[in-house]
Image (cartoon, rainbow, N blue to C red; front, side, top):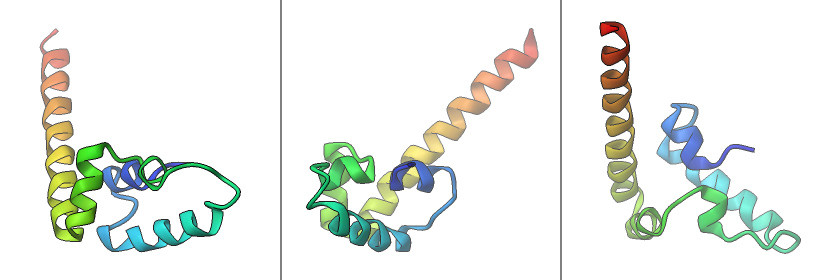
Length: 82
């Protein structure tokens, strides 16, 4: 199953959907020992941002998303030059 972070970065969910993931984690946390941080797919810094609020987390994840897109563009540009 994809984590919230993976789905967010792929544009499959919005920041508002995080509550659904947290609820799912709560439902399964008694039988599954996965931490919420791991379940969401977050680094420590991303978890800290989540604790600070959705807007802080959204900003952090959007920065990551834009970096990924920029890196992909650079790689494609280099490949097209060949």
